[in-house]
Image (tube, rainbow, N blue to C red; front, side, top):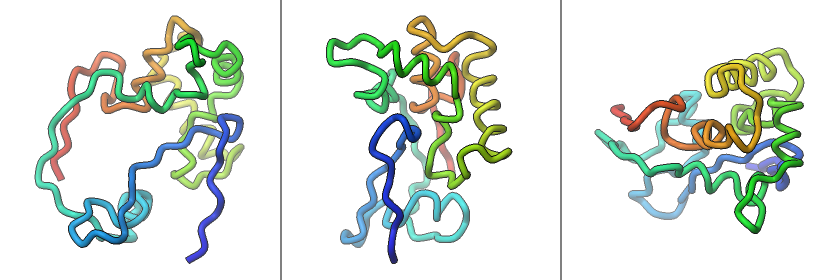
Length: 146
């Protein structure tokens, strides 16, 4: 199976990637998460209940694209998101950038997480929620029950 090259810079979109382990028999995830989410594969270790939360775990996704080496938000990249929020749509969804569906997903994400507010240093925690476990800026825990 030949895989397309994944983007390596923020300019092409954000990259979300859980680890895939094809060599360990009892690995949790042995295929692409998209294959499981789209129902193309059931090749994952069944976990009956997963409950937990790490405060601001999505912050790691922002490094180095949003947070600079001195731990301050990158004004350039925040401005890019403000101008074109479609960059925040996960590439794993397989949506063509600029397509009606991709723009709709970007609009829905922006409405849900930013609620009409500008993307700036003041709203960076809203962006962290997109890449973390919480489903909204005010959510306090994440629970998954398959």
